[in-house]
Image (cartoon, rainbow over all chains, first blue to last red; front, top):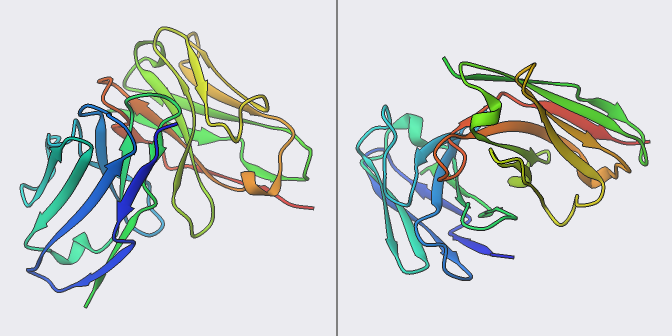
Length: 107
Length: 117
């Protein structure tokens, strides 16, 4: 099974900061990597699909990139509503696997 | 508008069974890939099962042999039959759609399953 190693588990940042979250796959997953945002008590929301594509309606301060099996989610200019937990998901080969999550907290 | 509404959650004793249902609207379940994802209280997301548009099914190692995912095209629903439940199966179960083949793109609001004696 493909393992997804997500880092860091948590980070503290201020409004306006830029932050980067990483996920590394244990083997090739091509671009079958999505990022999700989850606020407390809510269902997850898709932020990025196919490693770097923004769905319509997602603000452009979110971006995704890939280098081999290393993927990153960057938020440029954190907004108050961005303080949440973020997860990556590989859908290259079932069983699909999520990263353990990164909680972005207010400094 | 795409919507998924889960039902069937509740309290069940270890070793018991439960059947979850996901009623879809705004799309047809047989045209897309449908998943179930679990989230234990205070924990992260855990992928559980997938029924591909072609009908193939896939499961997490932790549930294979105990859970069965299926769909009913006439009712536009997806179900998860859960047998031999254990306390680690406790959590919110989300029905989730993959319309593009690039992973989950939309989610239901979830239904809570509690396995406890």
